Structures are given as C-alpha cells and as structure tokens.
Image 1 (tube, rainbow, N blue to C red):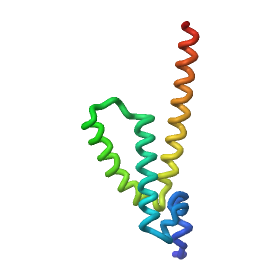
Image 2 (image 1 turned 30 degrees about the horizontal axis):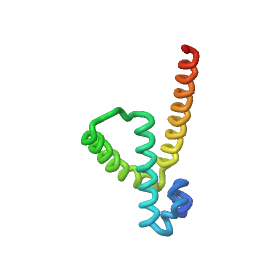
Image 3 (image 1 turned 90 degrees about the vertical axis):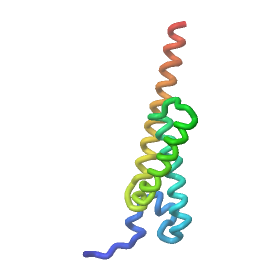
Image 4 (image 1 turned 90 degrees about the horizontal axis):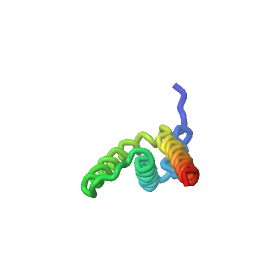
Length: 108
C-alpha cells in the first residue's frame, strides 16, 4: 500500500486552514465555517417562521450535527458542498425575488 502524505488527502478548506500543521486552530476554523454555511443553507432553503424556543432547539441540533460534519470535512468535501449548495440557493432566491418583482410590476 503506497504511503500518502496527509496534506495531499485534506479537503480544500482543511488545507486552507492548515489542519495538518495547526490542528486545534484549523479544526475550530473549519467547525465555524461549517456552522456558518449550514445555517446559511438552512435559512435559505428550509427555515420556516418558528417561535424563539423552537428555533433555538433547531439551531442547537444543527450545531451538534456540524460537529460530526467537521470530522468528516477534514478529508471529504463537506464544506465545498455546502458552499455550492449555498450559492445555488442564493441564485434561486435572487431569481425568485426578481420574478416576483416583475410580476408585481406587470399586474400594476
């Protein structure tokens, strides 16, 4: 079995944050990035208006799930997938808003 360098196997964000050289800071940065991207994807794609307590419970479980994703994201493209998902949802929301504005002006 050929020996491979750990740095070569890291995902883009894990190598960007230098998880192999400074694991503690790198993993925390990766964790915070994944939390931010998960919250963004959740808000853009799935969030509904909830009472404050229910919303807090949802975000607590979201953050707990991000802990598992962070360990996987060191070697798998989890963060990159979240970036792509957030970009797609942002484009969708912009187009939807533009379409609604056009329909509103057409109805006037």
